[in-house]
Amino acid sequence: MIGSPNYIPPEMALGNGYNEKVDIWACGVIFHLFLTGKFPIDGKNDAEILRKIRNAPPINVKQFSLYRFDAMALDLLKKLLCKNPRERPSAYQALEHPYFTKNNEVQEEVREVLEQFILFSYYGPLQRDILRFYYLKIQPKYEKERYKNLFFRLNKSATGLLTEEELLNAFREAKLTWVSQDMIIDMFAKIDLDAGGTADFEEFIITMILKEDFLRDSRI
Image (cartoon, rainbow, N blue to C red; front, side):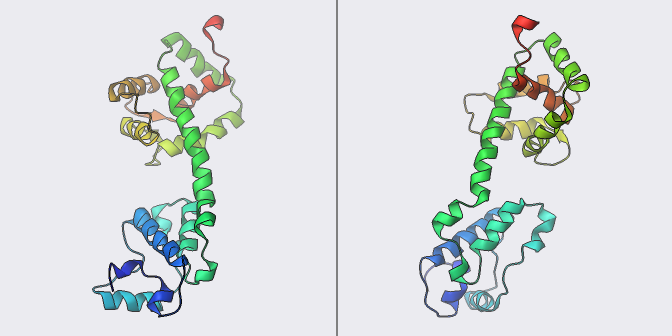
């Protein structure tokens, strides 16, 4: 045997016939490593790993509840590591999974949010105060709900308080490489309206009001 046995699917460990679905299982192993930092099936030596692969029950994604993984990620993992190769998705089907297609949409929305932060940083104190008033007194509830998921896409710690480091990471992940670190730090200082060192959801959504295009220089 050449290579790590950790990537071998059950049908190969059992000595049964196999096809291209072995690669889908291997992708599932890599995805499991990406999510948890661990192999789905491991052991002290090759023989123990192969024995566990042959006898392992279907993967139970409920065991990952403490990690707070995205439900779509767990669903994809379960499909990739399906013991029955006939029930595993093809490569095309895997790439069409909502984990990839939905996340592409979300990443585009996150990118738009970051671009809003850039615009917001160019507004003066008076304009920012008007945005705060609009948020507190006028903005419909549905608008606030619309941005809650996006806020927590940036606030990876899920504390409800966005940090400067999280904003820096978001710009890196969005590959907005033309925005320097100094620009992002200055931007965060302007988003952090109360100068508390973090930005809460209220401060975040005030920057998003610019998307409504009601605040123009010609009106102020």
